Image (cartoon, rainbow, N blue to C red; front, side):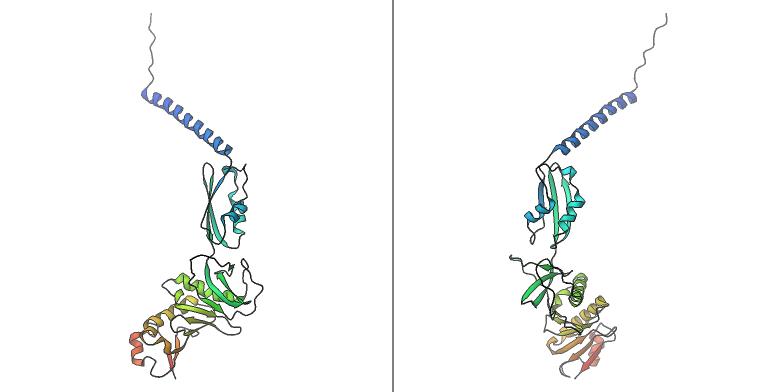
Length: 280
């Protein structure tokens, strides 16, 4: 009589069976966790980055209720509603299970102050949105914009569409983006009608005629080089004006012949090529 042979399971087969049960268990736990997360209601808001806008305003825009579930929130729709607020430049939303929605707000920041328009002064951001005065210890170190004249009725949240004001903001936006302290070299931008845009330096209040708002970065870079290498080595208060309207030139006028750098010194001191000095 022949005896049956007993086939013992191999080690690999045993490991495979064990892995099957482990994976199945993990899948079952994940499914249960997903079902549990969907059933959790009562979303909590974690609002960050607000100073102009209140957390209550953000909560109104998110529009949650007691039955809201974190997994069913339409983040794109919520973002659209939040960005409808004129004081908010951008917002990032993130789910933090089981019940927290993180709202990271980027508010608009002042880049200038519009002076004496409708008998008031107005903080504006780089896109021209009028911002409310913030009653806080923070003081904004920004230049003023003058000469804007009559504009449409202004109030916080309104965007200024005046072309001359927008050009001034474009210059300031470029200056700030260049870094190196160029933005903080100017205290004022004057935008009088039918005249060239004029910037005034913080040091000595020297008028800087910008001319057409083109090639702004090149003009500001040329001015900065002149200012650091020539004006600040002499007496900036002796400058009558600086003219940037000429291609590849910084044209200056000094108040007296003794105030301007000597021609021989110009080539050694100045780093801007083709610079013209006008003496009177």
